[in-house]
Length: 244
Image: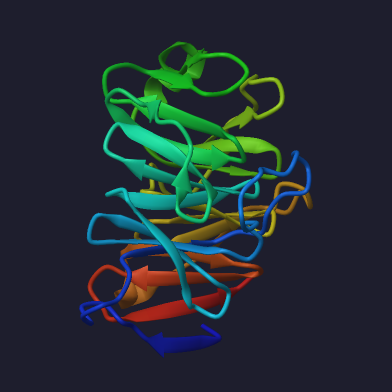
């Protein structure tokens, strides 16, 4: 690995979840006192925090759970409910997600699945994941994320790909493991993490690449930043930094 850094797990006062996202220019600006460009969002002790690029606190609001980013937007997900961050200290109307199992952010759209059925919701149309032919033998599902124009869902033996434009399922992509609990997008490259890492660059058509973690695995958290992936082992207080 190119580098290893000391972790902050267990240090009092650290934020449990943090994501940074550039504000998209594709949508009309929201009339708020401060744009979200460069905003850092984090959750800790039942609240969501807005931080300036230098880490200075900007605003806070009560919202337990975690923050997710994608497509230039940030969402706070708590239990079976999600709310989009619309400005410093303000949250959009709640979106109910009954029985939430997994979700992925694509701008103002939230893809999600429920523990109560096999339906994928939030896209151009609802999709019954239990009625996709061969997917019957890939019924168990793991992490999901949006990357390179597709929604990716980790299933047994590989990855299910669904077009974010049409909602049509694409071809099944075999992977060295699955389902894995973590899927993330790093600058157009799909990254999966479980007992080891794998990467896939759909735009380049490159083959899937496996990255063994050895005794450091399994992965307890996966964070992407530009062309880098930070893999936090579940049983160690350090991060492995991988350059894609």
